[in-house]
Length: 487
Image 1 (cartoon, rainbow, N blue to C red):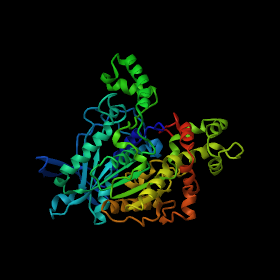
Image 2 (image 1 turned 180 degrees about the horizontal axis):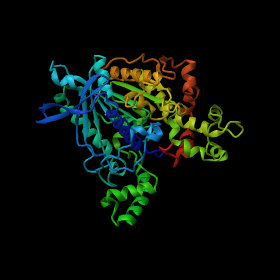
Image 3 (image 1 turned 120 degrees about the horizontal axis):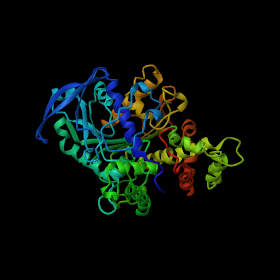
Image 4 (image 1 turned 90 degrees about the vertical axis):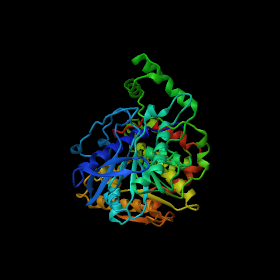
């Protein structure tokens, strides 16, 4: 099945929203921080120091242009007030592969021989570092930047999946050099959300030298590797548009022409291309020692506007291929009295996100420490928008002031504590259950055989999803061409 959305743009835009707000919400402004003589890099690095939640944090930043992309104001999806701004960042397709290392400032002052655990996050957190210090479990976070969309796609023949290659370069760089920052190269966690989760899942099958992995609202089930014919079906019309605009072949086209062509085709990102190393990934076990995987309640918000614009009859036509048991479960049969759009969105959330979470965790749990979670705390800025795709990053990173909403603030603190424990090799919650963050600020482990979990995640549909082959085709028809971050 072809990829169902453009997750890489979303991931990058979410990163930008979080990191842009991050310093705005710091208790002190950034200032020139301590320097570090780094042995394996054979140089002296100058840090930027600021305070987060009463803890001094230092960042060593690479030059930070981002990969060229068509602009999207992610504040709309996250329901973020306009006061936080929407900064336009410098773009450069050749110099966008860089990274940021964030660590406790105290770790630079005290050399006690201890090596800190490391998390490589695709993309940019920092309050987690402050939280780790407060918990007495200090850690280092590395945030890599990498190529996106057509710039990550690679050539028709030769190198491909350049985003994966950029990320692997960053991982290998961390292994080689993190000791110079006080980090433990043998204790690395790789984590990401949305497209970041897709990439992290891929790396768990590619022998990445990491100990743990976190998949947040994304896995290869969301955007699986695509065959050559799918790639060519996209490249041919893009090449035609680019040639009309710039008179150059695709491989030599300027970034502006490529982005213009992508916008015309309503494509902001690409997908992973098939590669031998990812063959039969569905039948393989993730190659890490421990795994965390989860989702939010309303993942399918990304397709809301596209679906609600359809007549009821069209939605019923698109879902007519569902097995009767699933049509009954989701009230997606013409005789149903309720409008079909919300039911179809619920089906999309289950198939692309909730069922993969359940499936990955159920397969992994008997073999290794595996922690499943769900997030049902609605967006505090717009509670009627529910716990939508991306809201988990607001809570986890603490980039916005949530002090007006004690329930949301409680969820954020609980998530950060759990993530720090996992990165440090501890048990964040009882792995036999599913941790539920919210609603109402309540955080508790649910019994996976209990009624509450089944009610929250349509537990009755999980087995049906795996039994009926027609589901991917139905969901593909519902979502194809209807993705939007402007929901």
